Image 1: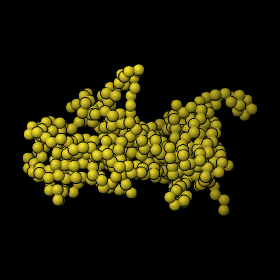
Image 2 (image 1 turned 60 degrees about the horizontal axis):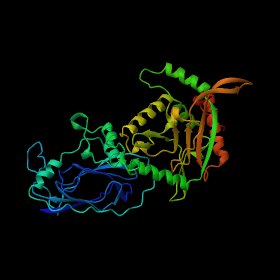
Image 3 (image 1 turned 90 degrees about the vertical axis):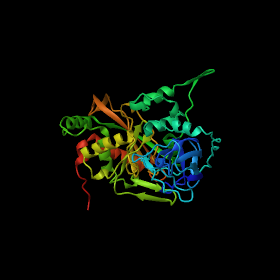
Length: 433
Protein backbone atom coordinates (compact mmCIF):
# COMPACT_ATOMS: atom_id res chain seq x y z
CA UNK A 1 0.00 0.00 0.00
CA UNK A 2 1.05 3.59 -0.59
CA UNK A 3 -0.33 7.04 0.10
CA UNK A 4 -1.20 9.84 -2.29
CA UNK A 5 -1.59 13.45 -1.11
CA UNK A 6 -4.01 15.47 -3.20
CA UNK A 7 -3.42 19.22 -2.98
CA UNK A 8 -5.88 22.08 -3.40
CA UNK A 9 -6.01 22.57 -7.19
CA UNK A 10 -5.54 25.89 -8.95
CA UNK A 11 -9.10 26.91 -9.82
CA UNK A 12 -8.02 29.69 -12.19
CA UNK A 13 -8.46 33.47 -12.49
CA UNK A 14 -5.83 34.31 -9.88
CA UNK A 15 -7.37 32.20 -7.11
CA UNK A 16 -4.97 31.85 -4.18
CA UNK A 17 -7.20 29.87 -1.83
CA UNK A 18 -10.65 28.32 -1.53
CA UNK A 19 -13.12 27.92 1.30
CA UNK A 20 -14.33 24.48 2.34
CA UNK A 21 -18.11 24.44 1.95
CA UNK A 22 -18.87 20.75 2.51
CA UNK A 23 -16.93 17.50 2.74
CA UNK A 24 -18.50 14.54 0.97
CA UNK A 25 -15.86 12.10 2.24
CA UNK A 26 -14.30 11.60 5.66
CA UNK A 27 -11.38 9.62 7.11
CA UNK A 28 -12.07 5.92 6.77
CA UNK A 29 -14.33 6.25 3.73
CA UNK A 30 -13.49 4.36 0.57
CA UNK A 31 -13.92 6.49 -2.54
CA UNK A 32 -13.77 5.88 -6.25
CA UNK A 33 -11.97 7.97 -8.82
CA UNK A 34 -14.09 10.93 -10.05
CA UNK A 35 -16.42 10.71 -7.03
CA UNK A 36 -17.09 14.18 -5.58
CA UNK A 37 -15.13 14.42 -2.33
CA UNK A 38 -15.43 18.08 -1.38
CA UNK A 39 -17.23 21.27 -2.38
CA UNK A 40 -15.20 24.46 -2.16
CA UNK A 41 -15.90 28.10 -2.95
CA UNK A 42 -13.67 30.78 -4.39
CA UNK A 43 -14.64 34.44 -4.59
CA UNK A 44 -16.22 33.67 -7.98
CA UNK A 45 -17.63 30.16 -7.98
CA UNK A 46 -18.66 27.04 -6.11
CA UNK A 47 -16.61 24.05 -7.25
CA UNK A 48 -17.22 20.32 -6.74
CA UNK A 49 -13.82 18.62 -6.58
CA UNK A 50 -13.72 14.94 -7.63
CA UNK A 51 -11.29 12.35 -6.29
CA UNK A 52 -8.21 11.99 -8.51
CA UNK A 53 -7.71 8.34 -7.45
CA UNK A 54 -9.55 5.45 -5.83
CA UNK A 55 -8.68 4.49 -2.28
CA UNK A 56 -9.38 4.97 1.41
CA UNK A 57 -9.39 8.46 2.89
CA UNK A 58 -6.67 8.76 5.54
CA UNK A 59 -7.06 12.43 6.48
CA UNK A 60 -8.60 15.67 5.28
CA UNK A 61 -7.56 19.29 5.78
CA UNK A 62 -9.99 21.90 7.03
CA UNK A 63 -13.60 22.04 8.16
CA UNK A 64 -16.52 23.89 6.53
CA UNK A 65 -15.69 27.59 6.68
CA UNK A 66 -11.90 27.09 6.65
CA UNK A 67 -9.79 28.34 3.74
CA UNK A 68 -7.09 26.21 2.18
CA UNK A 69 -4.35 27.75 0.04
CA UNK A 70 -3.83 26.54 -3.51
CA UNK A 71 -1.08 23.90 -3.50
CA UNK A 72 -1.60 22.96 0.16
CA UNK A 73 -2.48 19.34 1.11
CA UNK A 74 -6.23 18.84 0.93
CA UNK A 75 -6.80 15.10 1.36
CA UNK A 76 -4.59 12.02 1.79
CA UNK A 77 -5.57 8.70 0.21
CA UNK A 78 -4.30 5.21 1.00
CA UNK A 79 -3.95 3.41 -2.32
CA UNK A 80 -4.40 -0.33 -2.81
CA UNK A 81 -4.39 -2.57 -5.83
CA UNK A 82 -8.18 -2.64 -5.51
CA UNK A 83 -9.97 -0.29 -3.11
CA UNK A 84 -11.92 -2.37 -0.53
CA UNK A 85 -15.63 -2.04 -0.94
CA UNK A 86 -15.38 0.11 -4.08
CA UNK A 87 -18.14 -0.56 -6.58
CA UNK A 88 -16.99 -2.23 -9.77
CA UNK A 89 -17.67 -0.40 -13.04
CA UNK A 90 -20.28 -1.61 -15.52
CA UNK A 91 -17.64 -3.57 -17.44
CA UNK A 92 -16.72 -5.43 -14.21
CA UNK A 93 -13.07 -4.81 -15.05
CA UNK A 94 -10.63 -4.59 -12.18
CA UNK A 95 -9.90 -1.05 -10.94
CA UNK A 96 -6.18 -0.54 -10.42
CA UNK A 97 -5.22 2.54 -8.48
CA UNK A 98 -2.34 4.57 -9.93
CA UNK A 99 0.90 4.57 -8.05
CA UNK A 100 1.80 7.41 -5.70
CA UNK A 101 4.75 8.27 -7.89
CA UNK A 102 2.60 8.75 -10.98
CA UNK A 103 -1.00 9.47 -10.02
CA UNK A 104 -3.63 9.69 -12.69
CA UNK A 105 -4.46 13.21 -13.86
CA UNK A 106 -7.39 14.48 -11.71
CA UNK A 107 -10.70 15.08 -13.42
CA UNK A 108 -11.62 18.72 -13.95
CA UNK A 109 -13.52 20.21 -10.99
CA UNK A 110 -17.20 20.93 -11.61
CA UNK A 111 -17.87 24.65 -11.43
CA UNK A 112 -21.14 26.43 -10.66
CA UNK A 113 -20.95 30.24 -10.68
CA UNK A 114 -22.45 31.86 -7.60
CA UNK A 115 -21.70 35.57 -7.53
CA UNK A 116 -20.48 38.54 -9.56
CA UNK A 117 -16.77 39.02 -10.11
CA UNK A 118 -16.59 42.32 -8.27
CA UNK A 119 -15.24 40.93 -5.01
CA UNK A 120 -11.67 41.21 -3.78
CA UNK A 121 -10.02 37.81 -3.30
CA UNK A 122 -10.00 36.94 0.41
CA UNK A 123 -6.70 36.69 2.21
CA UNK A 124 -5.28 33.21 2.59
CA UNK A 125 -5.87 31.48 5.90
CA UNK A 126 -3.70 28.68 7.12
CA UNK A 127 -5.61 25.38 6.85
CA UNK A 128 -6.44 23.44 9.96
CA UNK A 129 -5.32 19.85 9.50
CA UNK A 130 -7.55 17.06 10.68
CA UNK A 131 -5.71 14.22 12.35
CA UNK A 132 -5.53 10.96 10.39
CA UNK A 133 -7.97 8.24 11.26
CA UNK A 134 -6.73 5.67 13.79
CA UNK A 135 -5.41 2.35 12.61
CA UNK A 136 -8.14 0.13 11.24
CA UNK A 137 -8.99 -3.38 12.24
CA UNK A 138 -9.37 -6.21 9.78
CA UNK A 139 -13.14 -5.69 9.70
CA UNK A 140 -13.06 -1.92 9.21
CA UNK A 141 -12.87 -1.94 5.38
CA UNK A 142 -16.30 -3.60 5.38
CA UNK A 143 -17.68 -0.93 7.70
CA UNK A 144 -16.08 1.79 5.59
CA UNK A 145 -17.72 0.38 2.50
CA UNK A 146 -21.09 0.45 4.23
CA UNK A 147 -20.56 4.10 5.15
CA UNK A 148 -19.57 4.87 1.58
CA UNK A 149 -23.15 5.00 0.25
CA UNK A 150 -23.37 8.59 -0.94
CA UNK A 151 -26.05 10.80 0.51
CA UNK A 152 -28.53 11.93 -2.15
CA UNK A 153 -29.01 15.71 -2.09
CA UNK A 154 -28.79 18.58 -4.55
CA UNK A 155 -25.75 20.92 -4.44
CA UNK A 156 -28.00 23.70 -3.13
CA UNK A 157 -29.22 21.52 -0.25
CA UNK A 158 -25.68 20.38 0.50
CA UNK A 159 -24.68 24.03 0.78
CA UNK A 160 -27.64 24.79 3.06
CA UNK A 161 -26.70 21.85 5.26
CA UNK A 162 -23.10 23.07 5.53
CA UNK A 163 -24.19 26.59 6.41
CA UNK A 164 -26.50 25.21 9.10
CA UNK A 165 -23.87 22.80 10.44
CA UNK A 166 -25.99 19.73 9.58
CA UNK A 167 -24.36 16.36 8.85
CA UNK A 168 -26.33 15.02 5.88
CA UNK A 169 -25.56 11.46 6.97
CA UNK A 170 -27.84 12.04 9.98
CA UNK A 171 -30.81 13.31 7.91
CA UNK A 172 -33.53 11.00 6.64
CA UNK A 173 -34.55 11.97 3.12
CA UNK A 174 -38.24 11.99 2.19
CA UNK A 175 -37.66 12.35 -1.55
CA UNK A 176 -37.51 9.63 -4.22
CA UNK A 177 -34.95 7.00 -3.31
CA UNK A 178 -34.25 8.70 0.01
CA UNK A 179 -33.18 11.99 -1.58
CA UNK A 180 -32.87 14.79 0.99
CA UNK A 181 -35.26 17.67 0.29
CA UNK A 182 -35.25 21.20 1.66
CA UNK A 183 -38.13 20.32 4.01
CA UNK A 184 -35.94 17.58 5.52
CA UNK A 185 -33.22 20.14 6.19
CA UNK A 186 -35.70 22.57 7.71
CA UNK A 187 -36.86 19.85 10.10
CA UNK A 188 -33.28 18.92 10.99
CA UNK A 189 -32.39 22.57 11.59
CA UNK A 190 -35.18 23.13 14.14
CA UNK A 191 -33.81 25.08 17.14
CA UNK A 192 -32.21 22.94 19.83
CA UNK A 193 -33.60 23.37 23.35
CA UNK A 194 -30.98 24.58 25.77
CA UNK A 195 -31.01 25.86 29.31
CA UNK A 196 -32.54 29.33 29.33
CA UNK A 197 -34.27 29.14 25.94
CA UNK A 198 -33.85 28.09 22.30
CA UNK A 199 -30.92 29.03 20.13
CA UNK A 200 -29.63 28.09 16.71
CA UNK A 201 -26.02 28.60 15.68
CA UNK A 202 -25.44 29.05 11.96
CA UNK A 203 -21.87 29.26 10.77
CA UNK A 204 -21.39 32.05 8.22
CA UNK A 205 -19.71 30.33 5.30
CA UNK A 206 -20.05 29.98 1.55
CA UNK A 207 -22.11 32.50 -0.40
CA UNK A 208 -23.47 34.17 2.73
CA UNK A 209 -19.92 34.85 3.94
CA UNK A 210 -18.98 36.17 0.50
CA UNK A 211 -21.97 38.53 0.48
CA UNK A 212 -21.10 39.76 3.98
CA UNK A 213 -17.49 40.46 2.98
CA UNK A 214 -18.47 42.33 -0.19
CA UNK A 215 -21.11 44.44 1.51
CA UNK A 216 -18.70 45.37 4.31
CA UNK A 217 -15.94 46.17 1.83
CA UNK A 218 -18.22 48.35 -0.31
CA UNK A 219 -19.70 50.24 2.62
CA UNK A 220 -16.31 50.75 4.27
CA UNK A 221 -14.40 51.92 1.19
CA UNK A 222 -17.03 53.73 -0.90
CA UNK A 223 -18.41 57.12 0.24
CA UNK A 224 -22.06 56.59 -0.72
CA UNK A 225 -24.15 59.52 -1.93
CA UNK A 226 -27.84 58.60 -1.65
CA UNK A 227 -30.58 60.27 -3.65
CA UNK A 228 -34.32 59.49 -3.60
CA UNK A 229 -36.77 60.83 -6.19
CA UNK A 230 -40.56 60.51 -6.44
CA UNK A 231 -41.84 59.34 -9.83
CA UNK A 232 -45.42 59.46 -11.12
CA UNK A 233 -45.78 56.15 -12.95
CA UNK A 234 -49.49 56.46 -13.74
CA UNK A 235 -48.89 56.66 -17.50
CA UNK A 236 -46.26 53.94 -17.30
CA UNK A 237 -48.73 51.65 -15.53
CA UNK A 238 -51.33 52.34 -18.23
CA UNK A 239 -48.84 51.45 -20.97
CA UNK A 240 -47.66 48.38 -19.09
CA UNK A 241 -51.20 47.04 -18.69
CA UNK A 242 -52.00 47.72 -22.36
CA UNK A 243 -48.88 45.88 -23.55
CA UNK A 244 -49.48 42.98 -21.18
CA UNK A 245 -53.02 42.52 -22.53
CA UNK A 246 -51.73 42.51 -26.10
CA UNK A 247 -48.45 40.71 -25.50
CA UNK A 248 -47.26 37.91 -27.79
CA UNK A 249 -48.50 34.44 -26.89
CA UNK A 250 -45.06 33.22 -25.77
CA UNK A 251 -44.07 36.39 -23.90
CA UNK A 252 -44.31 36.82 -20.15
CA UNK A 253 -45.81 39.83 -18.42
CA UNK A 254 -43.91 43.11 -18.36
CA UNK A 255 -42.80 44.55 -15.02
CA UNK A 256 -41.59 48.04 -14.15
CA UNK A 257 -38.07 46.64 -14.05
CA UNK A 258 -37.92 46.13 -17.83
CA UNK A 259 -38.97 49.74 -18.48
CA UNK A 260 -36.44 51.06 -15.95
CA UNK A 261 -33.60 49.07 -17.51
CA UNK A 262 -34.47 50.28 -21.00
CA UNK A 263 -34.84 53.90 -19.83
CA UNK A 264 -31.54 53.63 -17.96
CA UNK A 265 -29.70 52.70 -21.15
CA UNK A 266 -31.06 55.90 -22.73
CA UNK A 267 -30.11 58.07 -19.74
CA UNK A 268 -26.54 56.76 -19.59
CA UNK A 269 -25.90 58.18 -23.06
CA UNK A 270 -25.89 61.59 -21.37
CA UNK A 271 -24.29 60.43 -18.10
CA UNK A 272 -21.49 58.07 -19.16
CA UNK A 273 -19.62 58.76 -15.89
CA UNK A 274 -22.18 56.53 -14.17
CA UNK A 275 -21.55 53.53 -16.46
CA UNK A 276 -18.09 53.01 -15.05
CA UNK A 277 -16.00 50.46 -13.16
CA UNK A 278 -13.30 51.60 -10.75
CA UNK A 279 -10.06 49.61 -10.93
CA UNK A 280 -8.72 50.40 -7.46
CA UNK A 281 -5.47 48.49 -7.99
CA UNK A 282 -4.51 50.73 -10.92
CA UNK A 283 -6.38 53.85 -9.81
CA UNK A 284 -8.25 53.94 -13.14
CA UNK A 285 -11.91 54.49 -14.06
CA UNK A 286 -12.94 52.18 -16.91
CA UNK A 287 -15.82 53.80 -18.82
CA UNK A 288 -18.02 51.44 -20.86
CA UNK A 289 -19.99 52.21 -24.00
CA UNK A 290 -22.09 49.06 -23.70
CA UNK A 291 -24.54 48.92 -20.82
CA UNK A 292 -24.41 45.63 -18.92
CA UNK A 293 -27.13 45.88 -16.28
CA UNK A 294 -26.86 43.75 -13.15
CA UNK A 295 -30.24 42.66 -11.76
CA UNK A 296 -30.02 42.08 -8.00
CA UNK A 297 -31.93 38.83 -7.44
CA UNK A 298 -32.88 37.20 -4.15
CA UNK A 299 -32.36 33.42 -4.21
CA UNK A 300 -32.58 30.63 -1.62
CA UNK A 301 -28.78 30.77 -1.41
CA UNK A 302 -28.54 34.55 -0.98
CA UNK A 303 -28.28 37.60 -3.22
CA UNK A 304 -26.99 37.08 -6.76
CA UNK A 305 -26.59 39.61 -9.57
CA UNK A 306 -27.15 38.10 -13.04
CA UNK A 307 -26.30 40.45 -15.90
CA UNK A 308 -28.38 41.62 -18.87
CA UNK A 309 -25.60 42.17 -21.39
CA UNK A 310 -25.71 44.91 -24.02
CA UNK A 311 -29.08 46.09 -22.76
CA UNK A 312 -28.79 49.18 -24.97
CA UNK A 313 -29.25 47.00 -28.06
CA UNK A 314 -32.32 45.10 -26.80
CA UNK A 315 -36.02 45.84 -27.21
CA UNK A 316 -38.50 45.98 -24.34
CA UNK A 317 -39.72 42.41 -24.69
CA UNK A 318 -36.14 41.16 -25.06
CA UNK A 319 -35.09 42.92 -21.86
CA UNK A 320 -38.08 41.51 -19.97
CA UNK A 321 -37.42 37.99 -21.25
CA UNK A 322 -33.73 38.16 -20.38
CA UNK A 323 -34.48 39.38 -16.85
CA UNK A 324 -36.89 36.45 -16.30
CA UNK A 325 -34.48 33.91 -17.78
CA UNK A 326 -31.51 35.06 -15.73
CA UNK A 327 -33.49 35.35 -12.50
CA UNK A 328 -34.77 31.79 -12.89
CA UNK A 329 -31.29 30.44 -13.59
CA UNK A 330 -29.92 32.29 -10.56
CA UNK A 331 -32.65 30.98 -8.25
CA UNK A 332 -32.19 27.39 -9.43
CA UNK A 333 -28.38 27.63 -9.14
CA UNK A 334 -27.94 27.09 -12.90
CA UNK A 335 -26.46 30.48 -13.81
CA UNK A 336 -22.97 30.33 -15.30
CA UNK A 337 -20.05 32.46 -14.19
CA UNK A 338 -20.42 34.54 -17.37
CA UNK A 339 -24.07 35.24 -16.55
CA UNK A 340 -23.14 36.46 -13.06
CA UNK A 341 -20.20 38.72 -13.88
CA UNK A 342 -19.39 41.84 -15.87
CA UNK A 343 -22.16 44.27 -14.89
CA UNK A 344 -21.42 48.00 -15.28
CA UNK A 345 -24.40 49.31 -13.27
CA UNK A 346 -26.94 47.52 -11.08
CA UNK A 347 -30.70 47.80 -10.62
CA UNK A 348 -32.36 46.37 -7.52
CA UNK A 349 -36.03 46.03 -6.66
CA UNK A 350 -37.85 44.85 -3.56
CA UNK A 351 -41.05 44.44 -5.56
CA UNK A 352 -44.19 44.51 -3.42
CA UNK A 353 -42.00 44.85 -0.30
CA UNK A 354 -40.32 47.94 -1.74
CA UNK A 355 -41.33 50.36 1.01
CA UNK A 356 -41.02 54.14 0.68
CA UNK A 357 -37.26 54.48 0.28
CA UNK A 358 -34.05 52.48 0.64
CA UNK A 359 -30.31 53.04 0.55
CA UNK A 360 -28.89 50.34 -1.73
CA UNK A 361 -25.21 49.46 -1.36
CA UNK A 362 -23.10 49.87 -4.50
CA UNK A 363 -22.04 46.65 -6.23
CA UNK A 364 -18.30 47.41 -6.38
CA UNK A 365 -16.40 48.07 -8.61
CA UNK A 366 -19.41 49.86 -10.12
CA UNK A 367 -20.11 53.47 -9.13
CA UNK A 368 -23.93 53.55 -9.19
CA UNK A 369 -26.96 51.48 -8.23
CA UNK A 370 -30.67 52.24 -8.78
CA UNK A 371 -33.37 50.86 -6.48
CA UNK A 372 -37.10 50.56 -7.22
CA UNK A 373 -39.51 51.03 -4.34
CA UNK A 374 -43.17 50.04 -4.14
CA UNK A 375 -45.62 51.74 -6.50
CA UNK A 376 -48.79 52.84 -4.69
CA UNK A 377 -51.80 54.99 -5.46
CA UNK A 378 -52.12 58.12 -3.36
CA UNK A 379 -53.65 61.61 -3.59
CA UNK A 380 -51.33 64.24 -5.09
CA UNK A 381 -51.67 67.66 -6.64
CA UNK A 382 -51.82 67.07 -10.40
CA UNK A 383 -52.37 69.88 -12.91
CA UNK A 384 -53.73 72.20 -10.25
CA UNK A 385 -56.11 69.81 -8.49
CA UNK A 386 -55.98 66.81 -6.17
CA UNK A 387 -55.99 63.51 -8.04
CA UNK A 388 -55.23 59.85 -7.34
CA UNK A 389 -51.95 58.98 -9.06
CA UNK A 390 -49.64 55.96 -8.92
CA UNK A 391 -46.37 57.00 -7.31
CA UNK A 392 -43.08 55.08 -7.06
CA UNK A 393 -39.83 56.26 -5.50
CA UNK A 394 -36.41 55.64 -7.04
CA UNK A 395 -33.70 55.18 -4.42
CA UNK A 396 -30.16 55.47 -5.73
CA UNK A 397 -26.59 55.41 -4.43
CA UNK A 398 -23.48 56.78 -6.13
CA UNK A 399 -19.76 56.61 -5.43
CA UNK A 400 -19.21 60.23 -4.39
CA UNK A 401 -15.51 60.01 -5.26
CA UNK A 402 -16.33 59.87 -8.94
CA UNK A 403 -19.94 61.04 -9.34
CA UNK A 404 -20.76 64.55 -8.12
CA UNK A 405 -24.03 65.09 -6.29
CA UNK A 406 -25.31 67.39 -9.05
CA UNK A 407 -24.66 64.78 -11.75
CA UNK A 408 -26.25 62.03 -9.65
CA UNK A 409 -29.41 64.09 -9.11
CA UNK A 410 -29.52 65.15 -12.77
CA UNK A 411 -29.26 61.53 -13.91
CA UNK A 412 -32.15 60.40 -11.72
CA UNK A 413 -34.19 63.43 -12.85
CA UNK A 414 -33.61 62.40 -16.46
CA UNK A 415 -34.68 58.84 -15.64
CA UNK A 416 -37.80 60.22 -13.92
CA UNK A 417 -38.66 62.25 -17.03
CA UNK A 418 -38.57 59.18 -19.25
CA UNK A 419 -40.61 57.04 -16.85
CA UNK A 420 -43.28 59.72 -16.41
CA UNK A 421 -43.60 60.05 -20.21
CA UNK A 422 -42.92 56.42 -21.20
CA UNK A 423 -43.43 56.91 -24.93
CA UNK A 424 -40.19 58.92 -24.96
CA UNK A 425 -38.26 55.83 -23.92
CA UNK A 426 -38.74 54.50 -27.44
CA UNK A 427 -37.94 57.70 -29.37
CA UNK A 428 -34.36 57.82 -30.69
CA UNK A 429 -32.20 60.56 -29.21
CA UNK A 430 -31.59 63.48 -31.55
CA UNK A 431 -27.93 64.38 -31.27
CA UNK A 432 -26.82 67.91 -32.04
CA UNK A 433 -24.19 68.38 -34.74
